[in-house]
Amino acid sequence: MNTYSNVLQFILKSISAYTDVIQNSTISNLLFFNFKIFAFSTIFFVLHHQKTYQEKTKKSSRMNLNLSIKSKEEEKEETQIIIHHWIRTLNIQLGWIKDFDKIVVNYASTVFMFETFRSSSKLINTFTGHTDGVNSIDYSIFDDCQFICSGSGDSTVRVWDVDNNKQIQLFNGHLSFVYCVKFSLYHYHNHHQNVICSSSYDKTIRFWDFKHNQQLQIFNEHTDGICGIEFSPFNGGRYLCSGSYDKTIRLWDVETSKSLHVFNGHENT
Image (tube, rainbow, N blue to C red; front, side, top):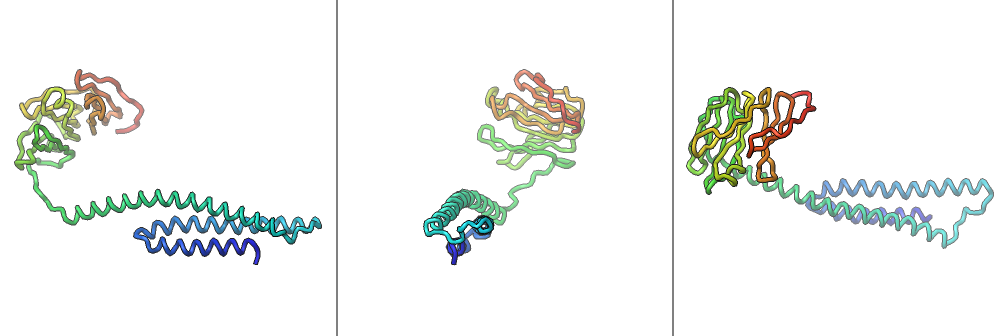
């Protein structure tokens, strides 16, 4: 039996042993799939190395070089080359699989938690009042009270007291569908105001103080309906961006009510 057969047998036995370990693990399918990729690539390397050597041997024989019988030292050296490559590959692959295990475990835990929540969850409450589809909702806590705001196709913005299960405010200043609503943490932290920002198909962005039932600001520089809005996660939410049917994104300074920049480039809504 030649060197390559010995090495190949050694590899196959090792692969078989490790496969048994993987198959008995709790996430065997994913690990086994990735280990098979490694196993086949390793075997391919050995067979390719053997084929290359055989081709070199035949070529040498044709050149009347007496290299058909390798010395023990040469055979040992080639064996070491193959085994070192295999071990190096194994270390890389197992290191990758170890990291992959963490990803898989985290993913499995998340799925398990979600499934547990889903199977044990129940409807807590239903808020009714809108007369058309609800396009957007947001949740926040002000002064230890929980609130939900909602924007609807009925052109209204509504505020719901989660703790007391009731609607506490309704704003009907928009002239068309309300697409997006967001609580403004900037107003709360800087002016201690309970404010909602809403965007509408009427081409405006409006700010509502739902504690004092009044409109505070209006941004009206878009030339078509406004699909979405988002407060900046930096500077305490001082900046607002908006996306519109007019194919632009605008950046606003909430403090000064000024449009800071218009991003053009989109070819549609």
